[in-house]
Amino acid sequence: MITLHQLRIFWSVAHAESLTRASKLLGLAQPSLSQQVSKLEASIGTQLFDRNRNQLTLTDAGKFLLRKSEFILASVDEAIAGLQEFSEGQRGVISVGALNSLARIVLPRAMRRLAKVFPGVELDIHEISPGEALDLLYGRRLTVALIAADSIAKSSVSFRRFPVFRDPYVLAVPRGLDLSEAGDSWNGLPDGDRKVLNSVIQFNFGTGHQRRMEDWFHSALPHHRVASQARTYEVALSLVQEGLGVAVVPALTSRIGGAGGEFNVDLYRVNLADREIVGLVPNQYARIEPYATFIAALEQAGKDIEFPEIHPMPPFLAQLEPASAPEPAKVE
Picture 1 (cartoon, rainbow, N blue to C red):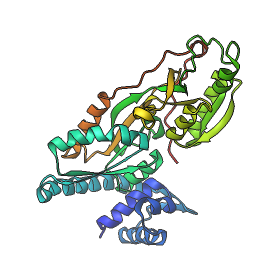
Picture 2 (cartoon, rainbow, N blue to C red; picture 1 turned 90 degrees about the horizontal axis):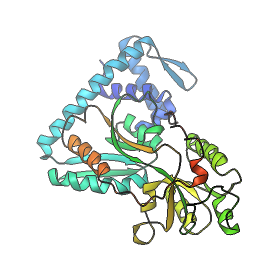
Picture 3 (cartoon, rainbow, N blue to C red; picture 1 turned 45 degrees about the vertical axis):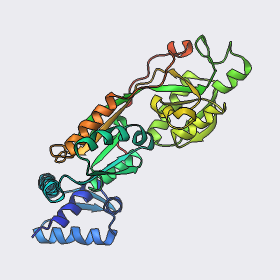
């Protein structure tokens, strides 16, 4: 007899590919997970995983059960969500995971739209990294995740993906640093401006993103030095605001903090592909209320966003080759 509890554990372990990671996803002790998997294998009389230390690889039987379990668990989740509409009178909780900047820009607008149709629905907002959001989705502890498209693997097919908005990357510089006629990032600039332009605030999150930014700065500002490292856009923009250097950020992050709701910086367009923000939701939730209305509210909120003023690309950047869009990479 296979229980739903065992099936959920099997599904999470199969996606996590290790007991250690599955333990984090489910919030259960690793010995308990291992015991449940062993009981499941004993009950069906066949091995579901090939074990190599802590790494787990699905056997043919495991791959078969994974396909079936996705359908079974999705059906159960859909039934439970549908029954809640009757038992709670269209009340309930939608758990959302997003970066801080996305949570503060998009979610208030979407929640306002949702409340007009479902005033009793509560949002449980988790300000987390894309990797953590995916983990919680796989662990069935989140309903919706808002993340950058290039931070998810092409193999993340267990969820429905929907577009929210595109956010252009910009070069943030201290207010008044005029780059409109800068044909070179080093020559022809006053000493003070040259020093600031070539002092870079570097991000220290996500090795793929960091590597792309390092390559870009070597191309765009060959004489630059790293003035500081930051782990959030807000900290980076605070440093830029104080005249300590420049940073490449998504345009909308400049709308957070600072007097009047914006950082005191100027933004210049750069030759990088836009940051594409998408939502991920388990397929079974996309078809029922209030989740379907919330998804529509997120999409509309993305369309209604007003971007801050962005100056044209400086001449020294316009002469560079356009940077290609990053390939989606699996989040570790």
